[in-house]
Image (cartoon, one colour):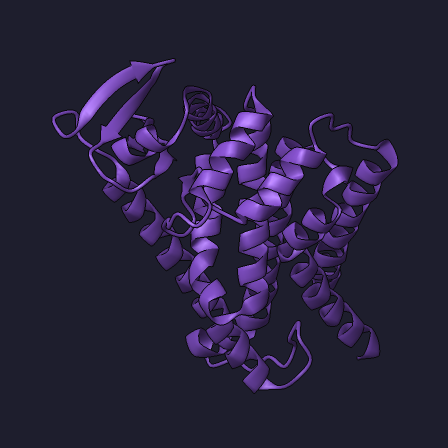
Length: 292
């Protein structure tokens, strides 16, 4: 029983650590390259969600068996009696429903942000559809998918110099080229939970910072990128969108200043991967042992 308690507690702690990994990787940002940190954040966060959902489903199985066959099973992954099974069932349904709702909202928001060919001015640039929207607001964002678009407003074009505008377009092209849309979809799925849980909100914010910083580092003129960020600081954007002014702009400017000649130290990278793999093992091994 004691061992069972330890195993179940290790799953909860490890899955929480995986979901919150973007916060830790932001704190030790120089241990990983920006694009590498984006991939590791996505892998750890998704692993944490899958492992936690699996543990809840395993604990909910006895309840489902009882409902379907009138049998009686006392064995639960998490310690406790039948109420633990019912609680796990409810938690599994709530988490899955929240993720699904967040993902659907993300897809719908992406569709709303896309412009049809007969709306606005469209120009082909480097294989992408650049849409120029008539608006006094300074906004730039990218929408991935089968018809990738980069949307900029006339207000932004008027506010920026030529070099700054090129940096903004390079930043948005980086989002499309690196396929950041699938990472944003994961953050969009987590966004509803972040409204009620501050740790999840922090993890989403840290992961979005990593995405935006990775795109910043792909621009050819870091000075022009910093200058554009300063001008657009405070521009409103929708949550979880590949927008130039998204995320913590102040931290992005600081990261650009400090990361002009970025080199990822090998010991730091090894430590980050070791921590991530340890958390995965602490999540997975107890689930396997439960069935042995």
